[in-house]
Image (cartoon, rainbow, N blue to C red; front, side, top):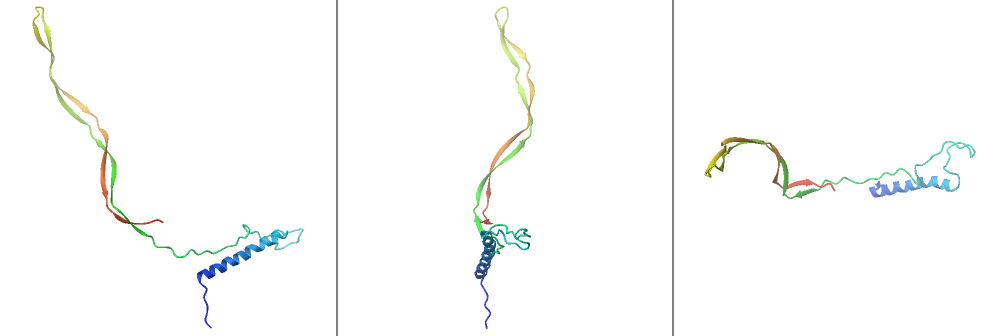
Length: 148
């Protein structure tokens, strides 16, 4: 005689049917007014009780099948804009200041050119500062695995 093997779907249906039958027994006893079925004791002094976690509950084994291999997806290349903060160092600058002249008049009314200040070199110090630079970088295309 040939041995017959049950398929996965047939086994799952059998487990679910058994679970429904087992889960229905406590609710039938509760519907008849007896509460949960009693394991020991008498009607006046109930013993330990079998209490299911929820009505019609029973452990059910569920098989979800094989895991699927992750799907590979091509991600196209693209330009990405990036911002970088760059420190620009301070520097000093030497600037020639021209001598200052002015026209004045003497007591006789003659016009004279008078030097008010001498020419000299001035040193100007420019402090350092941060500057934001925007760059475009090409990200090449690549293969990636899809999460869904």
